[in-house]
Image 1 (cartoon, rainbow, N blue to C red):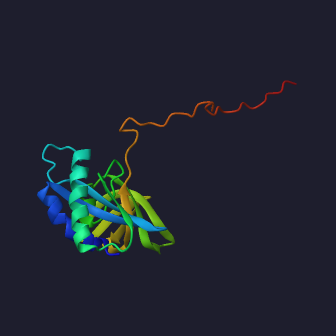
Image 2 (image 1 turned 60 degrees about the horizontal axis):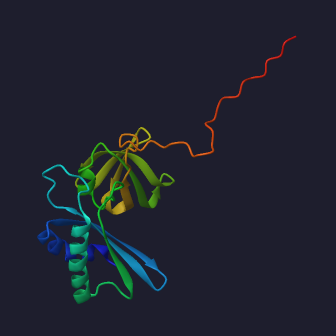
Image 3 (image 1 turned 90 degrees about the vertical axis):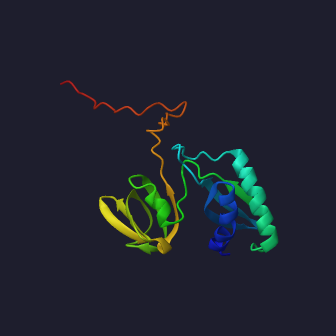
Length: 182
């Protein structure tokens, strides 16, 4: 299924609601599938990030559902899910990477490069449809069409979500060397 065609079809209608269609994911399953449409606010003038609320998701869902009922681009039975990008924001194109230069991202490539399909690094630059990542001290340039999926990696510590030890598990303490007296 062509997710780009769905984005092209729903984006103008969402723009009329003040929303941007970030991208679409299709997950096929037994007896149907899940069509997930990610939306965000078109205008972030107040600097709000991930400010899409339930009301916007519901309005977008009604609009998208009506459009897809007319065009019927999805074969068979499926569930439509409209979602905000969330804290681990998916990145669907180079322009979206450009908004987050300096932040960490995980990228899965369609084909391995130097034996790796999964890259994690800092978004360093975007030039046209190419994304530059700093991965383990090396600059890796990836074309937009080489990317299978990508998302931001939140700085959990900066967000105040430092992992805490699990209950019942004592923190590891260094073992002392046994001393013998002669």
